[in-house]
Amino acid sequence: MSIFSDNLRYLRVKHNLTQQKVADALKISRERYAKYEATTDPPLDCLQKISRFYFVSIDLLLSFDIRRVPYEDLLQLEENRILLPITVDSNGENRIEIIPEKARAGYLAGYSDPEFIEALQHISLPFLRNGKYRAFPVSGDSMPPHKEGSFVVGEYIERLRDVVDGKTYIIVTKTNGIAYKRLVRKGKNLFVAKSDNTVYEPYEVKASEVLEIWRYACSIATKEFEQDDLGVMSVKDLLQGIREDFSALRTEFGQRKR
Image (tube, rainbow, N blue to C red; front, side, top):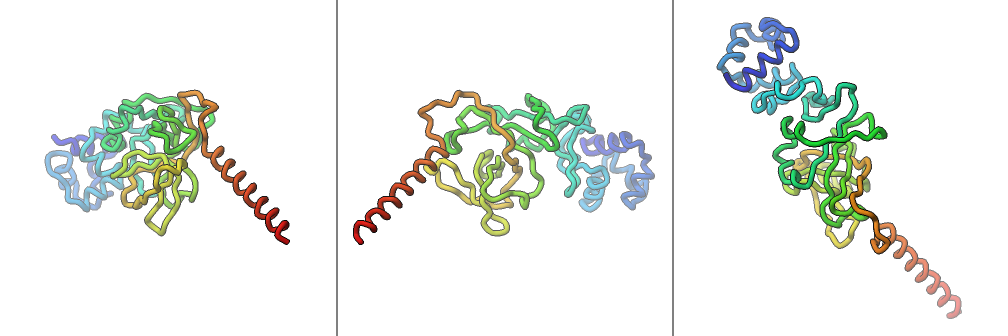
């Protein structure tokens, strides 16, 4: 038996359905459906119908034994109607998974794997509700005052159109992996990812490259902020002071010239 046929039988029994009822929903004969629970693989159009009928992604149906993760705990998205490995507890409260630095490289391969997500450590924060949150490690010094070793907690967003220009996001892409950046929209299907540390050049991100996007919710610092740390706001204040001084000098020079 294949993983797919096992999943198909499990889902049918889980929902207390007969083979005939599922076949009727798929608009095929019961005999044809029975073969899918045995050894025959369905054609693509029928596979899509099965995926939509059970609200389970085709990838999960074909590649993962969904009996290994509590089926009811997977979060259902509204628009594309698939189940992702984003879990909540028995009370419906968020389980905030923590992506440790050592798991950072494997996240691209494991972000859609329920077993990978289930194995992560998790925390709960009582002030973060009504959303799905995940904690990602900060790498480098491109987004001060967040230091390397700290964590940024992001809220999962389903639609790229919900991205607000100038706000910060954890963005997971096929080419750059996990990055925490300030995003600015550039056209319909393109974003510019900017670092608050201006030493780093901004770069473009195609919408087609985006795997996940998480809106900044809060951060967890693991190192004490030091007085010598020059944060972004300090830089802005310094530049503003320079502008004001320059403006005052220019005004004074103009008055003297008169």
